[in-house]
Length: 331
Image (cartoon, rainbow, N blue to C red; front, side, top):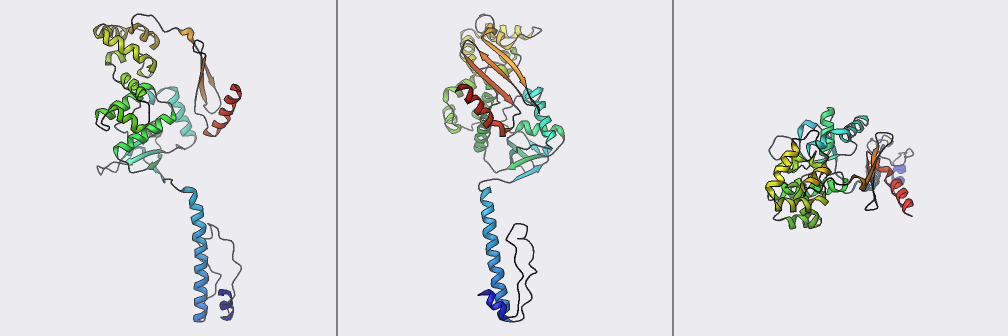
């Protein structure tokens, strides 16, 4: 109908290219100025039809982004750590953290965005939801950090932080315990059981993490690092402290004075009743290294007949390949 009206009005249309994102923002120059009211109406109808098709095309393209949040480059100096941040200071140093910094530097920034929320104090700053190590790496490199900004209340900030950290699986038991202890101490959850329910973890696992975080300060200082503490040590340490707290604290202070400091497994063995060291023959550990700072370790525990593989700086695109290789070995 529109074409017939245009022909009657003496107008000729040039062939139209298929609708693409590039052509959607350009002003069409292919329609001559109409000379009659009928021509103007026909031109309007044609343009309206074209616009409707463009909107339909763009809506189809936007479906790929349903549920996603926009990212922004933020000044790392305007971002502060969450008050429930669970990372121990040792997590921001050492070979693993330096490897993370090197990767971010080589890629020109953090490819995987961190998440932040606006601070409500009017300062224009942001609080980290998750991504503390990536933020610190960008801060030390003096570059902007790629971030998702989302408005979250305290409880949902904590739940998201916990979920992300447990998915990454690089947090140590002590760090997890510190995070949960802070949440309970500040009244974010009414009880440990409610916390376990809200974040979706087993209550017994939560209790172990809390027990590690709440060990006496002198006991923690006896270890080379609190990050060495393991869930399987909780019951024995707790029992030893309850049985004779004064003796355990005295022993812990004496261990602190030793130079060189004994291995954490040896410290554990001495604190739980003088049973000597944790046998080193139980487990054999081998380090492995690859290209692009990909590295890890393989731990074989002969007593438990188990193998643990820890890999860092692995391209997520290789997860399927790694899983297939392990499945093949078990086949």
